[in-house]
Length: 281
Image 1 (cartoon, rainbow, N blue to C red):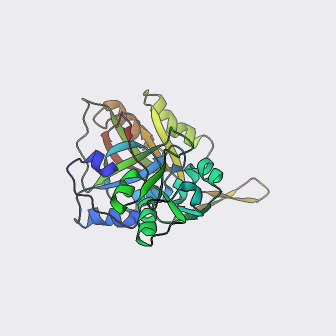
Image 2 (image 1 turned 90 degrees about the vertical axis):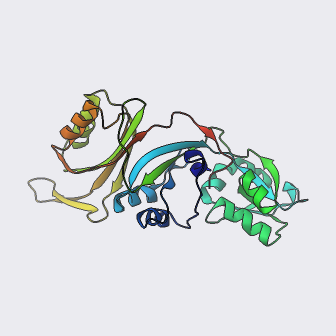
Image 3 (image 1 turned 90 degrees about the horizontal axis):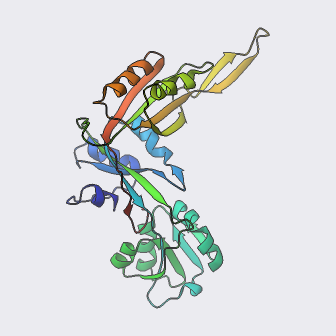
């Protein structure tokens, strides 16, 4: 659904794992990858933040989809007859209220559409799936309940990734995503964020992840020789500006003066609208 919104005429190629999607772009199997990066209820998809750093793909766009969950079952089955419900863990969590009222056993599977496919293939009349209305059409299931998510304001943000960056422009709203590390010390993160505030750059996201290769730092606590162990962090920041703007260039030049590592992940058009989506995948 996200790929279709991002590229209406594309042929969508499914990948079983997030990393496989990164590799498919790198190996020229596909032109773009469209991957979720955060959900308004479930938070950040940390696996994809880690993969953004591990791979050398560039963010070239974003799309935001409003999530709409359905309860699916075998035709002729009523929702009161269900004993268990299958879906992705986040989808199950996002429908907690409805599923609790049905008093069903919840079982987590890899994805929502796979849950629908499984109950259809095995004709499981006592089992339902939380998935999309589109999955019901594909696998010959019925929608037993529509819009069962606990919160109607449920939005997933997806990133479009490519082998080459796009040319930043100033004729429309742009967003820039970066990642950086800092030396440990009082006020280091404050100084890093100040480079954006000083130039009136609005931050839309800040995320921290422990460094994988050097997750811990040992430091002296004082004159008594005591040692303290700290996590070493990698920061991800999104801000509203194009790298074609002088203020964005100046902010990163300033940040580079004290950042121990800095990488621009992409400068790309902002998605300023939220599109309807039958369900998260």
